[in-house]
Image (cartoon, rainbow, N blue to C red; front, side):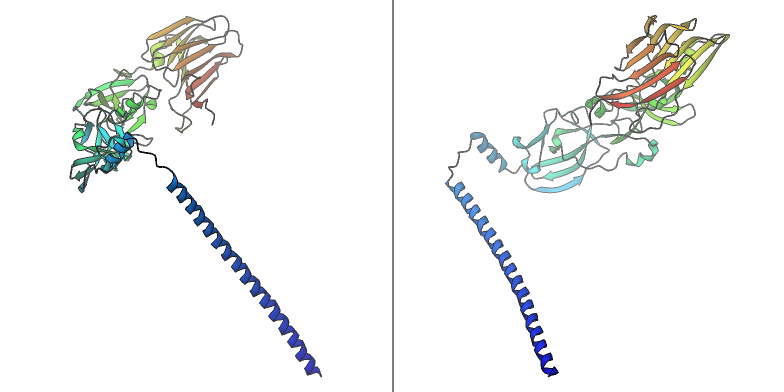
Length: 445
């Protein structure tokens, strides 16, 4: 009896398992069938859309080509240079200039002499004569020799020049943005006209142009605030330092180089023999021995004492800009302030003359120490302004009636510009001095 019950229970369980498993398999099969049907329907719909589109295009009336379109199509069928026979790497040691400012560059060798595929003309500012270029790659073809070029590199760096010396002539790669040019449209030239060793000659640096140069000036290397590893335009890649750290110290020239454009450069070192690099022999360099600007312009006499307060050292960062430092010199007689000199980080000298502990006269100097403006100080608080030859603006505010603040100054780029560099300072009547400097921006990020 028990055996019969067990057999019936087993039969019932088996039937249930078969029913459940079969249902699952059947459901999975139905799901797969539905997915397949959907894919087929999508393919058929896509074919129908493509067919209708093709029919619309076929029935659409073709517009006749214009004369210009016909000329371009005909030009595009012509192979500009034929077969390329061989290629050769260029040489950074051989400078070139464009033959004239009307030569053409093309986007590919196939389109050489095709006016519809000119990338740039020879009057492009970054490569136009007298800017030098070098050939990065030669292409010898059935219809002549063509080139890809590269312009000379000028790189601003912060580490010593000798770290970069190995990169002066290396890493010559084509600049495909310009395009292809015929070798006959390039003229060989020289990197410089003359280089000579000269007798050790004293110089000092009185200013640097803090304004950004034009593109042409930068491409030519014609900047006045850089010291160079090599004279720009005389090597493939020249490296540059700012000259803001070279102000107000003795320098010596030991070599002279004259470029092909006649611009003269001097190879400089410090009084201790540390190499500075090449500087343009422009008005920023004064031949002679440097004299401390405070002693030169304040001229302390017997019975007078002079003090100097200098801005703390600045670490060069993207926000600091120039790292030259402002100074304030003060001359006292019997503990009474007689004269003071502000030497801003932009190297602008400003003298204030005192009488009975009150400022009475303000004198602005050019960086070469010539007087550029002299004014009497008014009884009330007032700001006095002077713009230098580089467009930088120096403001001095005198607080005649204040019992705490004596003066404040700011020097640098016009504060209404989009961005710039400024140095600021203040002096209170107790003698405390505060300095600050850095890059600012009026642009909204």
